[in-house]
Amino acid sequence: MAEFYINHEYWFAVFQLVSAMLGMGATLKPSDFKEVVFEPFSVSVGTVIQLVLMPVLAFCFIALIDPAAGVAVGIAIIAAIPGGTSSNIFTHYAQGNVALSISITAITTLACLMSTPLILGLLIASYMPPDFVMPTAKIMKEIAFNLLLPLTIGMVVLRVSPLYARYLSTWCIRGSVLGLILIFIGSSLAGRLDIDQFGLGNIAIVSLFIAAIVLLGCSVPRVLGLSRPDSTAIEMEVIIRSVNLGIMLKVSLFPVESGQDNTLGDMVLFSLLLYGAIQLLLGLVLIPLRKPAVSALRKQSN
Image (cartoon, rainbow, N blue to C red; front, side, top):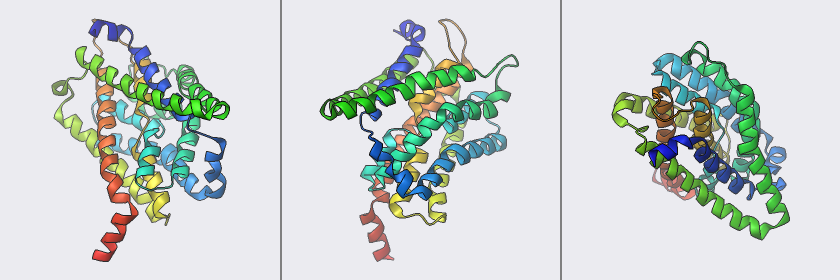
């Protein structure tokens, strides 16, 4: 099993990402982008945080902490990927502005075709071997075919057959979860997820970076005076990242063959999976804290 996973790791990552994007696309309609017109300020704030402030935060964090190369690259990838599809679900349950969440997710997903290779080129160059050349064209191709194309196909299916699109979305999201589980199992069996090798100190660094992301996502919308639903949507967009895209980028940047040492790539993968686990836990914690009923009770108690 471990040998099979190593030899086909790329396709495991592709299956997981394509399933997630098909599922997301099958829930998106052109009308979901109405917030771009009706709430341009909130959309702009969320987009700027994702595409500008997140990379700046990652750059400052890496410069200040100076983590191990694998952790630094993992943090850079986290900053370079857009918000994940789960952010829309968490926004819904937290009674945030779902239309705004969907709009920001869609815009940053489209923008990552250009922004992701640019951000990675700026943040990880110093941690790569001297002869490393950022495969910008390859990254753009991977994003176009494995992220944007299935997203578009899902939207077309929804347009043509809404009933079929509902089933497609449900099963694709389940397939995405299955893909993530298979990646975790395969990586574990192949010895790629070694907590002792990764180190508790590095776990603490990734956790500290997540805390910085939460602070960024919570503070900026509120400082700018956005409404609670809009602030909640942006907060979820910032915290819940598209880790599935990050895993595919990791596999593309750090391919490994059986018997090869790939310590740098393993640390990057561990950082991404650790972030993925913590972000889901954070989302579950934030949902009850962001609901209006909780906020109203707190105000009454004060």
